[in-house]
Image (cartoon, rainbow, N blue to C red; front, side):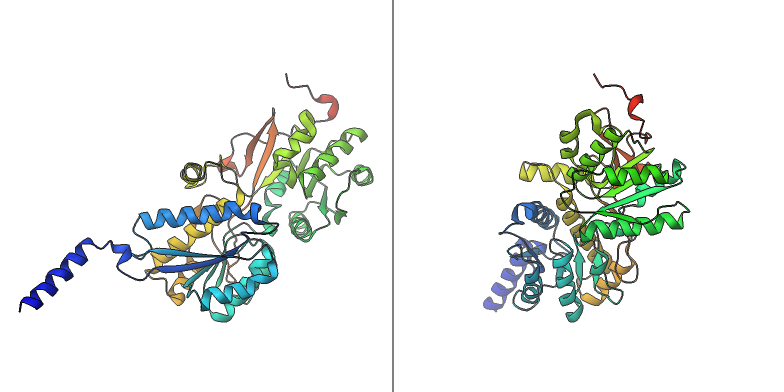
Length: 392
């Protein structure tokens, strides 16, 4: 009798003092990220954002009362290692859910494993269309896809009443995919655009392309590439006296673009997947928490990783479980907001709602000009060179 009383007292004391999130086995969430090798520095923010989310969710009681345990393996900056590492996460580490690695190549390898094992993978950074194959059922994309990178530029072109565009792309897969989708969308909108003008990497003279644009009467120029490409385009514009009414270049969103050009960078429009000053839901709190924990500001990869984790958190809450079948259904039906914009997917799990921002350089400052709901300034047409005044 005394032993039974001791057992009951011990049981109730343990139940009283044991935190709810520790009362059950943890929810193991796995990912493979570059923690060594050439991409380690680039991926550091992504890892930091996931650790921040883990800390936050566990401080709030975990997922459905279960503590979150992140298993982050090192892919050594090798995209080909993703498949084996995600097999390891499912087998050795018993991960219940997977978060995507860095980049589209690695994500495709991880997605293939997830689909074969019928285990949910939340795609954190993979933006290429190939990552979200039509037959996929367990892979869900959070970042804006490359196909959406021209959306804002084409909305701006239509608003300005432009008739003909030159669409250019650096000779790399991501830039060309973005440009091809922009071309198809322009044609659907009734804006003439010809063909995508592809240029070699390290191009420093765009005179031939500018002359073709002038001869065709192009009143808009949309380019996908790096900051140095965009800067060299502007140099060619000025040298040849060309000023389209709209100049959008993906690389113009980077501070390096302004550093290269000074005041000649004015009125250029950049394309950005994330801005720390954007009024997207939860962004201000995320930025503050990231800066407090890591003593640095978050970049796009940090925001994408954090957004993916928040999407997963919301889906688990709505499903009431981390069990695969119900979680998959919740992610497929979920519509929510994140620091990088809305989340909504099609039948293949491809993101259809999030779109990169347009930012324009106005009086030395980069301002959000699209979408309108987040705009801090109004889009200004790209003026002729002789109409510009120096900023004092």
